[in-house]
Image (cartoon, rainbow, N blue to C red; front, side):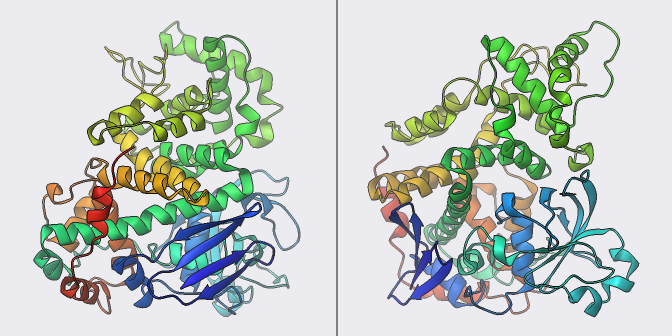
Length: 528
């Protein structure tokens, strides 16, 4: 089965084939080919109905898919507007609400020339859903500031501003359904789930890892497709920067970091010596973020001295950039670890932005001959920055100084950046260039990358699916990614007792199949 995307008509044509589905994208005058159903797992998740196969001309996609599109902002973000023509800037899409009330809580949206506002977002197929579903009579919907719908032409009296999704998708609907169809429609329940646990535990370790790697391959290509869609709008280098900023935002501050990356043309220019440029870039990012203290503290401490230097730079540009400053409410700062605070991450972004092209350095890293054992250390060397006189000694603007300097980028964050940003971005670029050898070599790095630090999501997934197995059962970052993909594709579409979950029959069918050669082939690919 193949999908042909024609950018002039924005249509998805489906071709039947024997064993795989391929997305072909028009890029300039060349076609790029990305195979996405080339393994047992990738085919099963579609054939079983775990993810829908949709056509662009269908009347109404599932509302759950529209929610996923909004949550992941798979939109032409620069073209968003209300039905009455006001530009829409989404500073934060909000948090998916799994209880009664609007679909997304605490979104931050700017309409036209108005100041950014915090409120809720409701997603419906059509505008009349506002009255048909009784939202107009439900006090829980009183704070909705944007009604996002699939299609429609008429404004609804007494309803919030309307925004259409259909004209502003960043990829054809059929492609989005494949990538987003498996995304979470509900959060993790308190009860542990796991009818698939017993059959998964009965798989031999090599076969379990092979299944997880097949799921990880789907995840790699999904992330690559997102970079590709964004690159069509803003170019490859900017799409990389946005991915890096999102990774620096961690799970709580992805969208304000995304917005700062989108403003890169505004802040990424600074004359003078290195120290002067760094201070100016830091001042702009901190100022645009809305996280600078409104008043300078008294005293002569190192923090106070640094803040005065930052304000000396920022006050000159504050008025000119006032309409781009993020409201402080867009950030989630409560309860995050000091090491994850956006203050320090913005300093790292400023350091990355200075000097030689970061995209060029990453591509040069991709071309180097590297032993598997040196992959992480070599990328850390590529992304590490010089010691900063303030940020190498502080977590935040308010924290006390360290006794010894700390690097701005550590191994834990490096693995997340490698798996979620650098390798998917490189992979889709060489896939577009039809460089199969380089594509295999990037896949080799992806599947041999050392495991990420264990976290609560992985622990819960191991409890639900693998009976509380040790983290050592997942030999690398790709196996961890595959486990997360199983949860997204199957667990999050069932309930606490696994009603109608299609993962157990998948595992049963997979256990009877001949051992896939996919993993062996990947391991046999020689590193660059």
